Amino acid sequence: MNEKLTGEARRKIILDGYINNEPLKDIAEKLGCSLASLKVSASKLGCTRTPKEAADFRRGFRIPEHKRQDYYQLMTSGQYRSRECAQILGILTTQSRVSE
Image 1 (cartoon, one colour):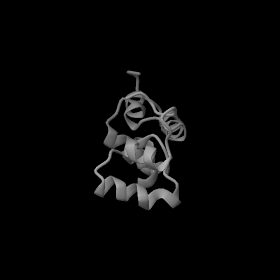
Image 2 (tube, helix red, strand yellow; image 1 turned 90 degrees about the vertical axis):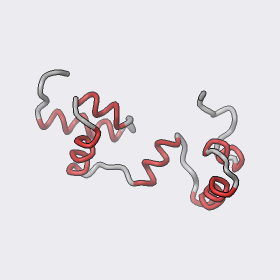
Image 3 (cartoon, one colour; image 1 turned 120 degrees about the horizontal axis):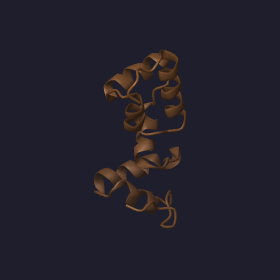
Image 4 (cartoon, one colour; image 1 turned 135 degrees about the vertical axis):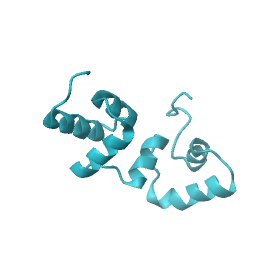
């Protein structure tokens, strides 16, 4: 996409990318812009991810509210990785694990 995108096409790509939970790096690559520029544009459109949503996206799974405190305690005091904590708490099973 070497040609300059119109404003409407740019907005559509950003909104579709956020709705489909695409990585920000991929959306920025489609637009041919930097991550910072993408984040500013997304902020103006009102479609940014909350810090909690962003963490869930990076992690690859969602932590239920009733297990959140246990999860963070295992992360900090137990020195476990996020996937290990999820398996210990039964959030992730070994079958649903994504290959690392």
